[in-house]
Length: 237
Image (tube, rainbow, N blue to C red; front, side, top):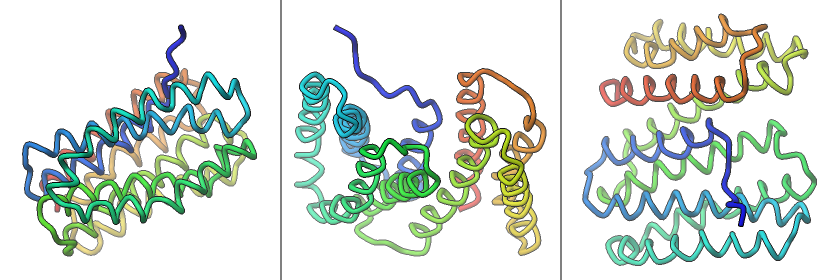
């Protein structure tokens, strides 16, 4: 039986980096592990569900949805007892998740709006992991949300210039302007560590444009850049 599993390398960075920043810049507790595993299973379950929306082997993909969704719900039992208010973050994700399902249904998963909506979902995950143990959404929590959103929006622009929109000159200028602008703005206002966190992303957007690396290599580069962003942000926030 073929395993149904998402293959997007970059999405794994979006899934984990915001969440883990919320954990480490908040108050880490052991049950964050359960919450993170539930988060992973929920993400993986969304993949077969998106295929169901496209009308592909519906019964087969429904089965894989439940294979992933049931463990996710079981893993959430203790975290919900620990802090029941995290349910509100799940509620906040619903309209964004329904939007992604709509784009799957019309087979426009790679639309820019859909990418932005997905980033918002992952950033809400950061708010969830931060609030889970701190029971507050302070300035640090919202900066985690903002900085992750800005970083991964740049990733969306970059990936489009490398794969689906590589012949679209407008995306080139959007990507270059965005990445350069982020680094310059943070440097000008004196947030040098924050600027440094975005620097590798800017370099790869400029240097790799026009090249033709394999999609897997693009994904691996994204993971490396995201790890640098994560480590630098641990000190910048």
